[in-house]
Length: 232
Length: 197
Image (cartoon, rainbow over all chains, first blue to last red; front, side, top):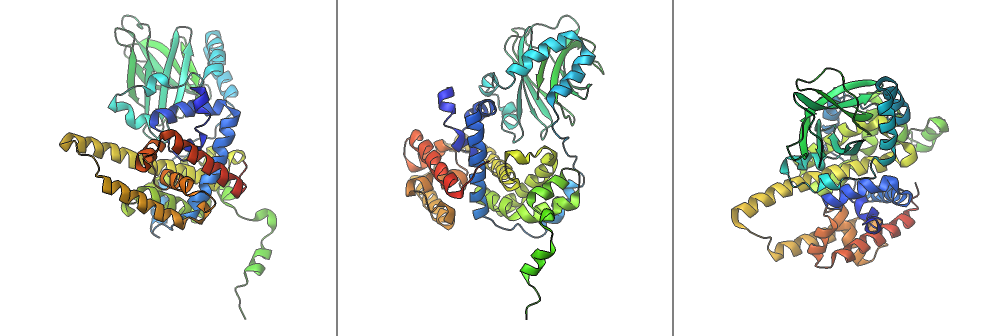
């Protein structure tokens, strides 16, 4: 598999991979110096092909673009994730510190195989979103895969064997940034421990995702220990 | 006597202030809408060109180009000049967005068509499409250095917005062959353009 992946940089840079291969390669190349260098080079190469095909858009398009951006919020710059997590850790205590150390090591390496095998049509727009971000949330009790699109304001959480949260309780996903947690939705696994739930979220900008157990009605802020965490 | 002397104008601008898409983008990243307008002016034809090639329908292309620029605005603070040029970044986002638009549209149509009649695309249409795309690719002089096979594969993938598996079907050659042609073609172009990031 990895052997094959190394040869996909060119097709990837031309957006010529099938969705499952694209997801697999996107999970792989940031961890591979050769592939990430190739992706950068081939993208610049493709940019020359783009410039070669240049066609000015209709002249009235600029006005509508400018109107649209004046009411569109920009993302915050990506900061040092270590700093972000340190703040979260300070607040959430030792359990998170240990879990986060594990997460930092495995994020994006584990990949997206569980999710991309899904043939559920409901998830297709999210999995194929241009800004879909795949993160593995790690914890002592296993892992949860999260796919987030800021564009679609949706997060897909998926797992294969997640423990029952307990009577009257539910799992809660939190967007973590600057030591603050914003609620991103509640979810619970099926009786067999499988989980595939699409959460509608509201304008989030996470540096990391965290999962706690909360009362079924939800909580405005996390009250339980952070059981799973993954850097975005 | 010609008043519009481009060299005189150029000299009037101190070198460190020469405006580039990267400098516009850096200002836009801080929320400067006017700088983003300059970025639009410098990249609009590149972005729209690639979108038009892939999407083909002019009305949809215009819509996609607008979406791409709104996306560039949103993502501007995340642009990292160490990882490539502004034009490279913009055309990557534009191509991806255009291709995804076409593929989601295709998926919808295919589902409908299969549901309706189990119809498949007549062979003639496929040949026509290949010839059509191959013709258009000749316009792109930058592909001249490639072999005909490489040019065809790169062009169908990039300008046609096809996956390598689709290209393999269109050209009736094995998938592995298409992958190799795309890879060899891009390596040749990379070296020819002197691209290094």
